[in-house]
Image (tube, rainbow, N blue to C red; front, side, top):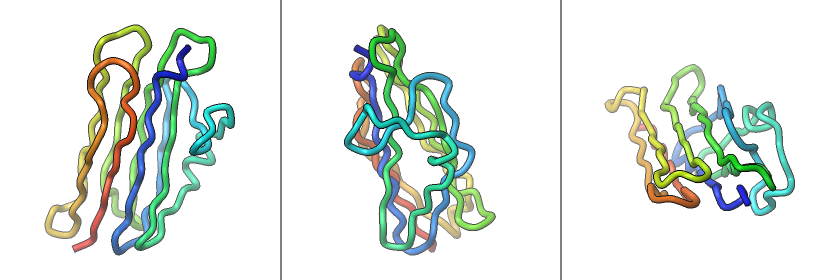
Length: 134
């Protein structure tokens, strides 16, 4: 039922090491990429590190047999520098999804880009966030 509300955020680090911090969920669960039945904790999400030239994914969905979707956020850091914050809401039973990437780091030092995602009802689907240190 609520597994239809899902998001997979692929984080691409071009030339630095990124750390995921301050991941939160108001609704739904995090799961292992490719298996919505394999739930992982927020603590595990906060341990994700993306090395230079690599990528990693953060996946979330609603809970099985529950009338709720997924809603949450996480931040990306390079060392002590906050690169930005990604926020999403993929509700069950509503027509619109919302998601946004806000870059906090100076655009003279970092470039980031968000692509993909569906703002209509159903799954947000696949989103990619790419980060480059200038």
